[in-house]
Structure formats: structure tokens, C-alpha cells
Length: 353
Image 1 (tube, rainbow, N blue to C red):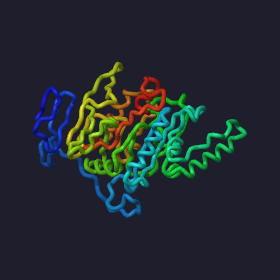
Image 2: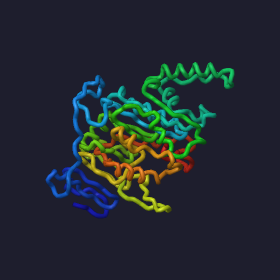
Image 3: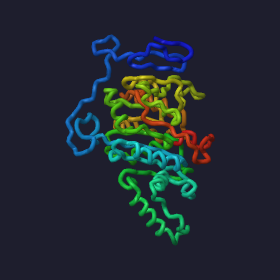
Image 4: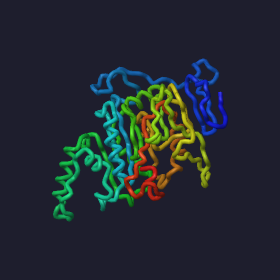
């Protein structure tokens, strides 16, 4: 069942897929039935009829009345240009963009809106609705600038009714966990919640893929999570053998805290359904929105980077949530460098958070 050493696929592919842990492949075995000795698979969520007029429609899943609506949280630290591209692709790649609501946590240099634009204004510029550049600075022109901004928000597609935002100066930033803690301020009554970085790309129909993968887990408290695959190395749907990055190893940091690095040291190949995981990535999670209210990001966890992931996983697990590696790639990583911080160790430029 296990091929040690070189990390190459054996000729006999497991029917349910294989997992590479950085050293060897292992077959994925189907979950045992309820009478099996190895325990029970998660209880399927209760299904209720729903007729709420939303496009999610039909049969609903217990735990949310949003009709298949999706809330996407995106924190960004001085990464407005990549974030604007992410926002445009988020809507363009969705099968049903009308059910998507975005919560932006914007940390920018407010004294330099042109050199360090917000994600929302960059998105609007990409959609052909940029603010005027000929309005002089100064208090006497403030009303004119505000009227121009109102025009942009009115004309920019989806900006006024599907994007909510919290903005503050980048000097007040205290790390990605602190930024994510503001998610609850802009979260509404959406059914599903997805958290991503500001530098992301998406599979076509990602919204249907994510909901379908969550449903396949057959667990109301399932959380899908994976390190996004590199954009330039997409392997989605290659003959049914999708390769999904998977974190396997845990290291102990200098303070004795377990750490997950924000990179994949393994992968899952040819999965038929999501696979239970012992790690979580801050770059992609997808679950019912009750996980954001039951296990919110800690606003007191200031300046935590790699250290944030294990406490998040532990808090989810001790509150009844299970993390799964999805069988398909839903989100990809955009590594384009559009800001001087990117590619350096300054700020959060490497992760785009």
C-alpha cells in the first residue's frame, strides 16, 4: 500500500486516491460503515426543504438559511493591486456571482491612495470605473472628491451591494489574525463562508465546486482547507487525477508551539471525496458560516504569522469541527508581484495578507 522513498505513483492506483506525505505514497481507504470496528463516519447533515426564492433553492442543509449564499473574506496588507485582480476573478469565475458577498479588510497607506490603492478601488478601475485623477488635493476639493467616489461606487459592478469593507491605516495593522478578526463586523446571514488571501485565482465554477465538495464530506461541521496550488502549475481534472496540495508535517517552534508552514509538503492525488486532515491553511478555508461565529479569529493574537495556524486548528477541533483536504483544487495562488513589499520579508507581502 505504501511506496517508500522517491514519491512516485505506483502502477496500481487506489480507487479512492492516494496521499503523498513528503516521503511516501499511501492508499486512501473508504470510510468504514457504521458497523465497522474503526468507528463511524460523520453523521450526514439534516436536509430540510427550502423555498426562499434564492438561487441556491431546492433542498437546503441544516445550519444556515442563506440559500447557498457565500461570504468571502479577504484581508489585504498594502496589496490592493493584486487584491483588485483577485476580486475581479472571484466574480468572473463563479457560476452564480449573484450569491457572492465579499468582506474586505483593507490595510493601506491612506496618505498615498494612488501608490497604495484599496482593493475595492483597484477592482473598480479594472472594471473601467476609476476615480478621476485631475481633482486637486486639499480640503477645498474634498466635496468634489467625495462626489467622484460616489460615482465610482454607483457605477462599479457589484461594488455597492456585494462588497463590504473595513479600512484602516497600515501602521495600525497587527498581523493577519488581527485583520481576520474584523470579519465578524462585515459578516451577514450568508450560509457558507470562505477565507482566502488577497492573491488568489479560482477554478471555473468555484462556488459550485466548493459547495459540492463540502456536501461530499457529509459533515455539517466540515471545514475544507488546503494550501492553494501555484497558479502556473494547475493540474485540475487531469483524467480525474487532480493533485491537491496537502500539509502533513508539523514542527515545534522556538516557543514550543506547534507550527504548520504555509506550504504543502505533500499532496492528495485522485481523491473521490474530501479527506480528513490534521492541518489547516489560512490561505483557503470553506465551511458553513457558523464556524466564523463559533470559532472567530482571535483579535488579541497580534503579529502571529506561522504560529496562527495550529491554534486555529486546535480551536476548531475542540469545538467539533473537522478539517478536510478537498478532492479538487478550488483556489489557486497568484504570485504576481505588483508591490515593492512582495518577494521581501517586510510586512505580509509574501502571503498577500
